Image (cartoon, rainbow, N blue to C red; front, side, top):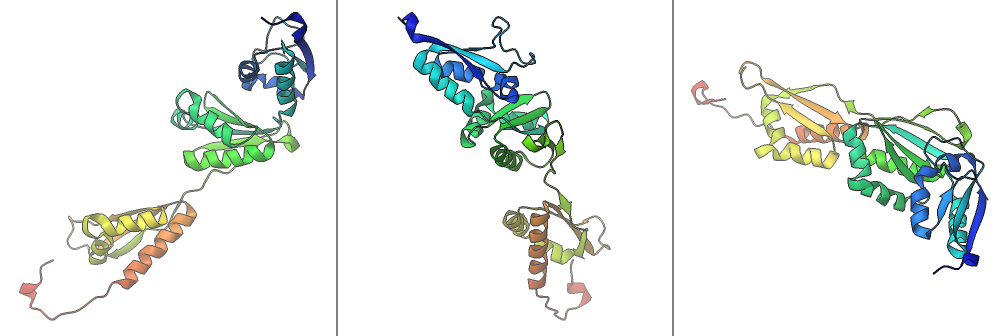
Amino acid sequence: EVEEASVTTTNVELPPEVIVLSFLYKSKLEKNHGVVIDRPDGGKGLAKGSPPSKSLIVHGVTEEAKECVRELRALDLSGKQVMTVSPKQASVIMGSQQGNARKIEGEYKGVFIHSERNQVTIYGPPKQVKACHEHVVATMGPEHGAGGDGPAAAGSTERAAAPRREEVPLMRIDKDKARALKGPNGDVVKKLQADSGANIKVTINKEDEEDTMATVRITGDPATVLKAKDGVNAFLRSLVVHHAPASSEAIIR
């Protein structure tokens, strides 16, 4: 049983963004410290979208309340990065029951990840938000938009470039070289793809025997496309053509 004297009420002045974004951390801090966090006017609680106050009130046992107050004052939510995502991408980022988001938050100190409609937003210290955003973009793939604002650009939105996909001009090569480039069961082209990280598609027109040329299409991020193109060209240069005399009846294509 808790003695009345050991229960304290502390008024904590905080930056406006910390109060406005209380929905990010309120439940977690209340659960961790066994306290109640409220607005100075009491009854209305901390519903998202409520008019911001200049402070919050922490009710609880003295020691737990003090620790909660320390954590509140340490919060830095001045950094923000907004990503426009598809439902599938949001699901990948947040994970089952938001488990993946909580794991990412644990890796980037002071960061909070929030998903709403077609957006995922990262809040926290600017440097940590930037690092976390780069990590999320790398894991979710390039097909999304992103915007953000930091402490030096309050009220503005800054578009962050998504990873760019590139495609080299279609390569046309001899059908025999194309077959060699594919290799048995596609082994050669699969290895080139694995080594470069790009997608390589070799197309051989089997219906038109008079067409002696095949096409090679390479797509992916700029760095992987360049590496794949170099790999394909190096392989083609390594091919050796031997000419052997033979009668026309002996040649079968």
